[in-house]
Length: 393
Image 1 (tube, rainbow, N blue to C red):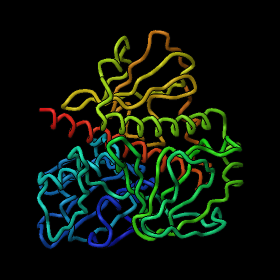
Image 2 (image 1 turned 135 degrees about the horizontal axis):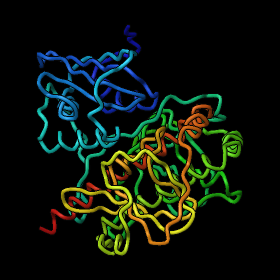
Image 3 (image 1 turned 180 degrees about the vertical axis):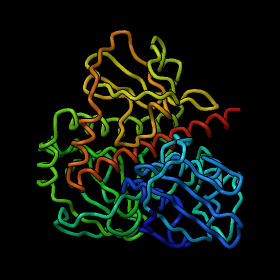
Image 4 (image 1 turned 90 degrees about the vertical axis):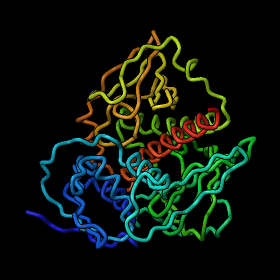
């Protein structure tokens, strides 16, 4: 029994946006895509918001999904229904989106119908990037206490400044970048439903130091989030879930720092994993979730060009499989290396899942957006390392 709950045109809502929307709503069902330029329809099967299989004519799995990024002229419908398709896709949603767009930009995917791309200008090093806009789910206006407008070209937050304000983007697009000796480095773009603010600020009365600059690309309408209400939600969480949220926030800051260091060619991967034991191999089916009690863990991604270092984790951090978050790292998309003195405790992911599901929609969406941003920034790091390696050949 199918139930069509979403439909539209790819001219107005891109495949990447559709994937993000279905993911943020943990949707289960089948996405049907048709185009007057293609004889066979496209089908993408979702389980709890994750694409698990796909088909376009003779193409199956990830190959089918990638081909659909070339369909700029088409119609889509999503039906909520039980899905029995085999799980053959294990990449994160954001990795699928960024890889699909990158392959399209490189001419590896056939373009179906008229298509335009936003080209990003190259910097002094010659490195260029084409990034999608990262969005979140619709905002719960019960948490919005005021609205503000940031005009095109103005800063919403400034790197190095203190601040504890939380916003959600109601309309428009903003750009996240870091200052470097080579000039500003673009990292991500964010749009409607995206949160601006650090979880760390919920613990610091004096405010939090901003780690990036966020500038309005066009006029951006911001919703001011009720900080007190958000703090109450945060403090009501169990210590385990609160620690995972804080650790995720730290991981985002680390991977953002790593993007800059890779860009500046200041990282030696051999030094990063020297003397470490590999605990989790990228791509393996590790189902456990661990909390670090003592020692150090390094997260690295293996690519065709070698390892890309991502983050250093310490006591209080977590690693492993988080069933309710898509962070685009271990176990499927990164490996875990550990120091000899590592001590861990195993977390009950089932109990954490139940608690997560009972959070307010706003705080749940905040954590999910944080995880998505970690995933997207991870892929930016891999892309920068690839371009740096190509320049060195």
